[in-house]
Amino acid sequence: MGEFELIRKFFQREQAENPAPGVIQGIGDDCAILALPTAQHLAISVDTLVEGVHFPVGADPELLAERALRTNLSDLAASGASPLWFTLALTLPTVEEDWLRLFSRGLFAAANEYGCVLVGGDTTKGPLTVTVQIMGSVEPHLALRRDGASAGDFVLVTNTIGDGAAALAAIQERIALTDEHRAWLQEKFYRPVPRLKESALLRGIASAALDISDGLLADLGHICHASDVGAVIDVASLPFSAAMQSLNDIEQARAWALGGGDDYELCFTVSPDAMPDLALLIARGELQATIVGELVPGAGVVCELDGELYRPAQQGYQHFS
Ligand code: ADP
Ligand code: MG
Image (cartoon, rainbow, N blue to C red; front, side):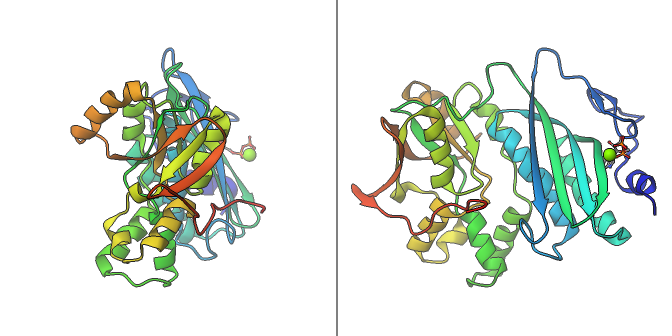
C-alpha cells in the first residue's frame, strides 16, 4: 500500500456533509487552511511519543492513539483552551493494516469524543513514532498560564493524584489490587480524561494552571518558577482515589502523588478573592478540586506534614536526566 492510499484509507474522513468548524481545507493539499472563531486566539501544542521510550514495544495501537490525542488535549485544558483541530505525524517501520486500523479507530474515537478534527499530517518510514499537534481556541486574556500566581494564592488539584504511577505499578504487577480498582486505574492511565470542562470553568478564576504530567512537585515547581513564588504543600491533604486508598500504604500513595507522573489532572492556583467563586462551583458539583497547599514569598516547593518539613521519597520524571 502506498503512502497516499494509506492516508486515504485510515486518516481521511468524509466531512463534506458536515464540514468541521473553521476547516477551509483539510487533508489532501499542501497546507490545511483553518479559520479561527471570531476574536479568539490560537492555542497550539505538540507532543511526540517514541516506541520504547514513551510507550512499550508492542503497545496496543488503539490505546496508543487514544492516549496520544488525550494527553495533547490535556495541554489545551491546561491553557484554558477549547479543542478545534489536530495534525498527526506518523513514522512507521512497516505498513501493517491491522495496526493502522486499530490506531485509526482509537484516534477517531478520542477525536469525536472531544470534538477535534484531523486536518493534516505526515507519514514516513522509520522507528515507530507518533506526533500529535493540537490546536484550539482561547478567548484573549483568559488563557490559563503558569506565570499568573502570587504569594497567598491557594494551590489546588482536580480529582485525585498519584493514579498514573499506581496504574503503572499495577500494569507491571508490582502491586495487588481488586479487579475493579485495577480496571479503574488502567482506564485512567490509557484513556486519561483531559480536564477541558474544569478548565473552561476555571477561566477567570484560576491565577495560574498546568496539567500534572511529571508529578505535583515538579509541575507545581514550574508555576512557582514562572510566577516567582514558593509553595508549601500540605501532604495530609493530598486527594487519593479509592484504588490508591485500598493499597493501605500512605507513604507509597504520597510518593506517587508528589513524584509520580501521568496524572493529567490540573494543578491550579486561586487568589483568596476568587475562592468564593471556586467554592460555589465545587459546592454545585461542577468541579472536583482539593486545596493541597499555598503559595508563599520565595522560591521552590516544600512539603509539610503536621507542621513539620516532610521529605518526599521520589522526584518527578525528567527527560534526559
Ligand atoms: P507533502 O508532500 O506536501 O508534505 P504529504 O504527501 O506528506 O504532502 O501529505 C499529503 C496530504 O496528506 C497532506 O494534506 C497531509 O497533511 C496529509 N497527511 C499525510 N500524512 C497524514 C497523516 N498521518 N494523517 C493525516 N493527514 C496526513
Ligand atoms: Mg509531508
